[in-house]
Length: 171
Image: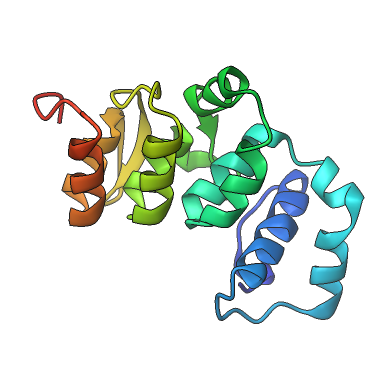
């Protein structure tokens, strides 16, 4: 991840650092400087990123092990609460205003393992939850996870959502 090329408000630096560390921890091939990893690994960097944002980013990037480490220790009702609240995407440029739940953003980006984990681990999760996402340069309001996955051609995600009971008529 080339941090210099990202258009982020300065308040998003800790999110960027945290995300960079998580990508490296998951074995993705990214060049991240040692100082970036050290800064992101500090307790202050993780503490400065709200849990809801950490869950959202882990889902967005398909970091299923990170999702497990964040959600499994929580009481199921607390975890469902985190998964039900749309989060503004801290990595998107400010004018793009994407706002989605972790399930929705994972489906939009084709993160089939993350989607499968979420629907299996949290059977009470609302599969019809909606948000706003970017598609082909357009902001789509009221998009559900199944619509996003189908529109982006993510067949494995569509199968996981339909298998979990997503309403095909909503998409």
